[in-house]
Image 1: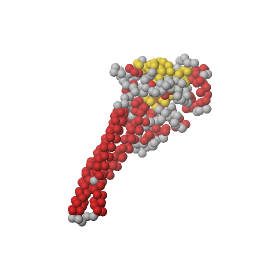
Image 2: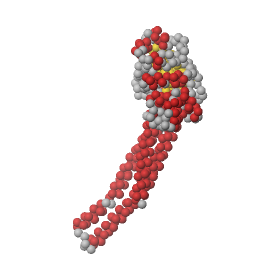
Image 3: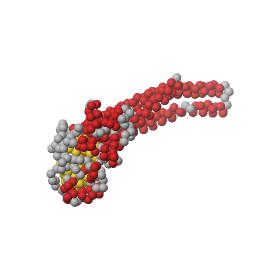
Image 4: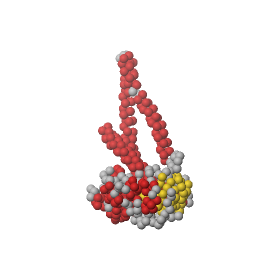
Length: 422
């Protein structure tokens, strides 16, 4: 019987530790990929993943607790019975004058063992208080609300055309004292490509976050197809946007699941078609289990270029009318960067695209280029117009001219002349 209890407790303890690690892994993965989860409206999926791991940990914990609940009283009962037997024998021998004072002290030592359970009860009380404090912290975390919520009268949006308008938008992050964006204004027609360039901290990525409604602007309006974003349902808005970030975010799941993350109800045929369009089918077919191959945490079993092509396939299968490219080639070596250019061309085709880049050579064929500095648009126009203006953009571009011209991400045909902001 003791061996059986020992095996049960050992197994439950191992399972509890494993499940505990899985919970931490899922939580860290979901939180570190929070922007991707929100952009693709997969919050409920991640909650369900966490719940499954948590329930597994709870079952293992209860298995261990039940075994300990049976063993602990049994051991205590045996110990108490032995202690009582020793005390009874000692009292009888003392009455018969067969017990000396030293022997009496031995009896008292045995009697002291009775205080162990009492100390255990004290420790249990301390544990309960500590658990109550931890439960309060968990309750506080669960009571947290998203910073952006739908208005009661928020309207749905089926399939956007892709007309984006920023009108005198100003914004600062919570607890920040200065504005990250100040009176930013521009317009992107459906199917156009607009590049945001400028030094780090100029507000380029903030524009993308505002477009995805991770935050609300302090002043001004952001409109999609003429609708103020605040009048639209957050989920409906994000269904119309695909993102490709600087770091190709992937989950510890199969290649198939990572591609289908853009559209969970996609068929196998659609997944393969998206992978082929992203030039990923060939290397996926060479993996040990093909599309069923698990890529590992953060895609550690794939190269940077392979992760980025899976991310491109994920964006393609989403088939959203608006595309945000945030430094898609920055973390790649030149060879890998060159290899994803053709998939990027296919991905951008027919979509309203916003490119964020420090490398001006990669954006020179965009329909329009916005140069930002300290949260303001200081120049705006096509590459030809801005080079003719010979301002900040022209000076920055000359610094990038030593890069390979073949690394250009092509946009659309050059648009009509646009006003430049001096």
